[in-house]
Length: 442
Image 1 (cartoon, one colour):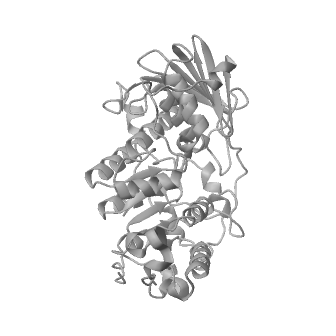
Image 2 (cartoon, rainbow, N blue to C red; image 1 turned 120 degrees about the vertical axis):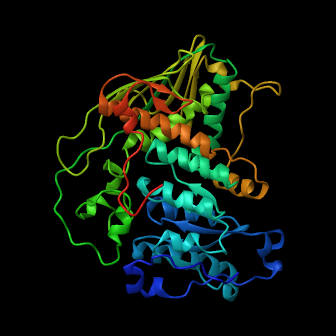
């Protein structure tokens, strides 16, 4: 279909940029002989929201597959949108030649989501911009791939999970460790009792440094800064608040609490997700949380440094998450009869014989995926649940957010995972959500 989605409050920078003010170009129909089984009628069309460091990585990953086609991109930075558009056009022009009619581009996610010719979207934006585009996509009937952590707040996570279920959408969280054989095998060993009774889980990951106060700068003409801020409070522009203008290096917003929670959600969303998977608590959560952390006393970057968070679950198992100066990077499951340790690219166990164990056909075998993006694509076709679905993503993200809240309050908190609320703690319960700057709202 060539009909363009309705324009919704087009931002000023689109008008100033020829790239984004031109009519959206949609791929023409390609003869079935070009694709065979992957004929155009069978392809899933995708729009990519957020084309920065992670967004471009996810786009390149998706371009491997012939049964999907990226037909439009979206970014509030027109330079990044243009780069992404060129990436897609170069790929399909080489593959399809004159049959390729071009990739569209937008500066406002609502324009992309409003298009009727898009089946699914990727959401690879800063954390504070995860929930609203994903919920809008679900309401518009689009399937979703969303980078972790799922959302900025617990309330956003519940709203997104409920929306995905209500509108019957397929969502994959970018928790790709679930599609790694080593992580799956470690969790299968634990869940099948190979290390005896599980007692403690130790999780380790890095931290971010602070920085000096930064000078206010002029907003680049290619950046719709008000849109970038979105629901977050107004704040003066400085490059280290947003992302580098000269390259795709690590962005400063990752270290600012207005837009994320630091490494507790950055790496915690990966490793605490694996802890939940191995513990078979991926649809519930802890009942008590206590944490402490070092926070910068001044400067632009204000998320946690070194930290220690202890989670207690209803069955008595404790998860102890600490910076990787004290806990080694990854996840260690400790049981009465041994342990298993897993991180990216490595697995170890005691006794070593555990590494040669086979999980029998009558034992608990976990969901198998060897390619995270491929799993999303196959589930969009079958309408079956992905390996990292929205409710599990919400629960894993919640564990991270509970830890973040605990480190800020510095006292023991009691949590009801069924009601998703703190017990007898008004202050902590207020921290499950954040106010949104108008006009944005859930």
